[in-house]
Image (cartoon, rainbow, N blue to C red):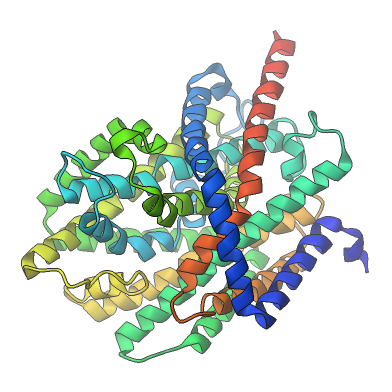
Length: 496
């Protein structure tokens, strides 16, 4: 009964249970409603997502290079709690994870075959440039903004781990504060269940490809249960024992996989593509972010790709940003922001350069492309069939998918538990159990939603759902950034 007196736990859980029941018993109607609502959001707020992304990147660069960047998250003489290697491993595992395996080959090839807009660049370089755009600075700026604001509230102002702590000086209403925290929790959960739904479907696709079998919906549901169970155990162990260890293993195996493909492919072509596409990305970043003039890829393209990505990154921003803040004690805001923006972005660029350029080479060698890499859930497994030790590579990819999903889920469970256990940095284990079970049930509902009609899949369902659930939080982030600047400026004036 005590949990019923905790609205931050009871209300989101109640909402999730209601959502799950509705989807279980009215799956097709649920999908139709989500489809209509997503079209409305896209029509009225699609470009707001684009402008918000550009604004976040510019805002964080200005903050990092300004005197505010000198502010340390913690005591003045303290050193970072985690080394740069373990810090990067944890933030990358939590922030991108299985997505880079899901899209490694399929997205660059899709962009090559369907160029987003006319360009003087070759289709291959344009494909990489646009892939970089959707996985680069903007995604990490959403995370970095949240990490900065929460980290400042947590380690400088000694507030509790709650989003409402970041704006409590400008909003006095207790009801409004609870509403903000509940909105953040619900946004986080939907972003998380989307990731699990996509990841388990890809693992299923990998198993089907490796074993030449048709594992169906039941296998995907069992995979979701397995991953949630492992993630619960990791979250139960805590940041240092569970989450850090699995994150380090993930990054090590991912790096070895990347280096293997790099060494077995055309090294010169990859390095040239990486440098050329990265340079063009930086040059074209602003017009691409505004979809300005000839850089406008059309509303259908934006809806299917960029709007969806921005909604996904926004949905992940609360738990990823708070998790990054939690592991960034002892760093300055400048170190935090430049580290979050630069290190994972260019690491991702190199990843897509290796897999994308290698896939382009395979297509050229084949002489014609017959949609071998079109299916998002099996493309990387088809790709590895063209390399030595294909079965080992594919089995390693399946294990990596599990590992990345576990680190995304366990870090999110840990953050949600901090929210609902009075903002404690080390929440009680019963909160971790409650959130693990609730997320699992909602994930099963989403997977069923993705199978509601023959012509849809989990990816389609996720795209439509996230564009809706991310909107309130996207609007709130603008206010949160303004409140942060006002608070820091006020404190700086009082010091001088």
